[in-house]
Image (tube, rainbow, N blue to C red; front, top):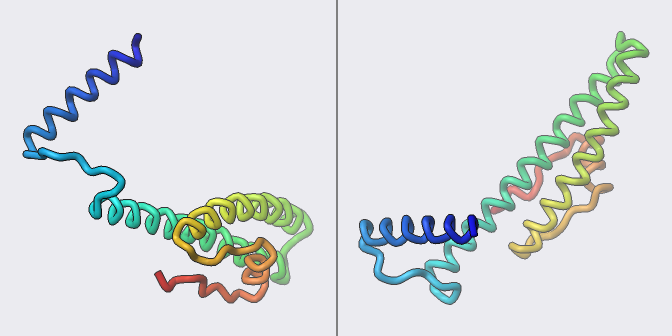
Length: 130
């Protein structure tokens, strides 16, 4: 009952807004405008997922360089090692999101081993063509 009341209230608000804006016809999935908006949304999801993967990998690169510096003590190395394990799990999760977004756009998917190799090579010019 509560959900029905909220639905009716929201529908009324949408209808009032459509009236104020002079909208006479709603988009349907077959409309060109709908498809253009869907492409924009898919591209935005792809770019955000790519930014997230890039952020995590660059952070991992910095942590690895800090770990390998001389003067880094045993406790700090252990702490950085645990942080790297956590970061690896975060990279795996981010890759799942990236690969789903890439599949929706028809871009190639990435594997975890490939991304970790980027981290060790510090070579991260990743798929910025879109």
